[in-house]
Length: 92
View 1 (cartoon, rainbow, N blue to C red):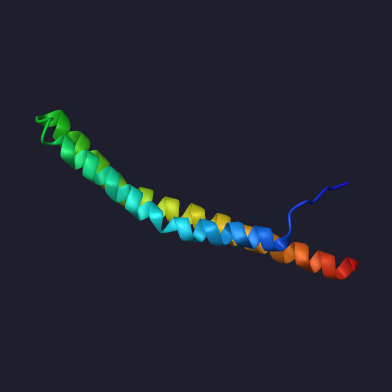
View 2 (cartoon, helix red, strand yellow):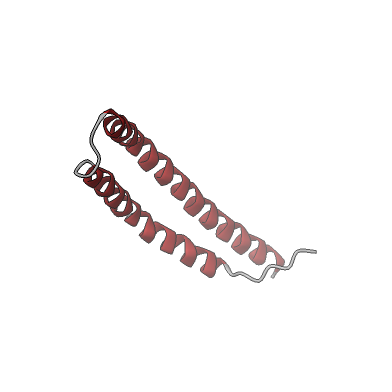
């Protein structure tokens, strides 16, 4: 037997919080970019250039993948909330 202790409202609330924080991922990524760029003042040479290029090439993939993952998680929480509500309506 399943023991469900979470409400659809709580699932939607968490989904909303994830959506709010999704916007902060760009801010975090921009901070990371600044940190790597700041290294160029302390670290010079081919290894630094190679690392900076590698990092900068990965940034768009990181942005896209993180956005997609968060959107999928948000969508799934909302879907589960809907299923719980539909099930409750059918039982009550």
